[in-house]
Image 1 (spheres, helix red, strand yellow):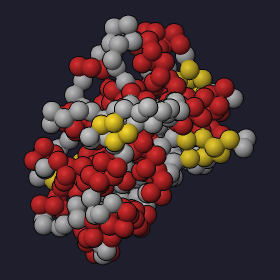
Image 2: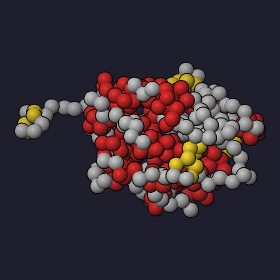
Image 3: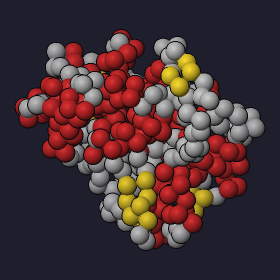
Image 4: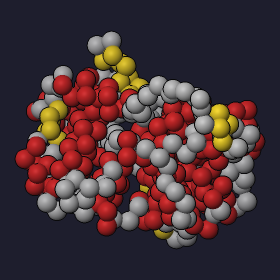
Length: 338
C-alpha cells in the first residue's frame, strides 16, 4: 500500500527509473570519434590541469560593466534570458562596440552595456509584452554603436520571440519557466529549447542529430549561479551541463595547445575564411571543445571534486578575454547560435 502524505498524496507503488542525461554530451561524442581536422591533446590537458583553479575564479557576470545585483531576482532572471538569447555573432570588421559611461565595450560586455543603457533610459526591455512588440527605432537606438550590430534584424526578431513566448506560455515571466522545471537544470534545458526556437542549437552529421545548446546552457548555468549568489539552492543537476561551444572557448583551447587543428583548418581560420554553420569542420571544432572541457574537469577532479563543466567553461571564457595582436584569430561562422 502506498504511503499517504497530506502534502503529496498517495505515492505510487513503483516509479520507473529514468536516468537524467544531457543530449549535448551524448551526441557530441559521435563527432569527436569521427573527427578529421580537430583533435584533443591529452598531454596539454595534463599540463593545464596543474595550473587551473576554476573554483577560485569569479563568475563571468561579476566582471560585467554594470551592477546586475541591483535588479531584483525576477528582473535579473528576465535580463539573463534576454541577454542569452542575443549572445552570438559579435565579430565583424569593423567590430561593433557601444559606449557606456565614457568607455567602449564590445562582445558580451557590449551587449550587457547596451541593454543596461536602454533600461537607464526607461526602455521597458524586461517587460515581455514590450519585448513582443518592440519597434525598429527602439532596437536601433538600443544597439547603437560604432557600427551596425551584426545580424541586427535577427536580433530584433529574437527579442519579439522571447516576449511572445513569455506572454503566451509562461504568464509573462521567465521565473514561471524555472518553477515549471521544478528547479532542475536538464528539465529547464528541455523546456527552453522546446519553447524558444532561437535556442534550438542542433546540427546533423551522418544522419545523427548533434545537440550543442550553447545559449540555453549558458542561460541555465547563469540562472543557477544567480540563485546561489542570493543564498538560494542551485538548480539540481547543474553538474550535467557541458561547455558552451562558441568561438572563444575553442580559440583559447587551441592557444593552450589542448585543441589541435589540421593544417587545412588552421589556414582557413588564420585567413579569416568563413566556416559554414553545420559543416563538418564547424561541428568538429564545437564537439571537441565540449569534450576537451569534460577531460579538463575529469583531470582536476581529485583536486577540485565538485567542479562542473560550467565552472571550467567560465574559467576559460574569462581567460580568453585577454588577447594580443600576435594571437591567431577566432574561427568565423555566421550563426545566431554563438
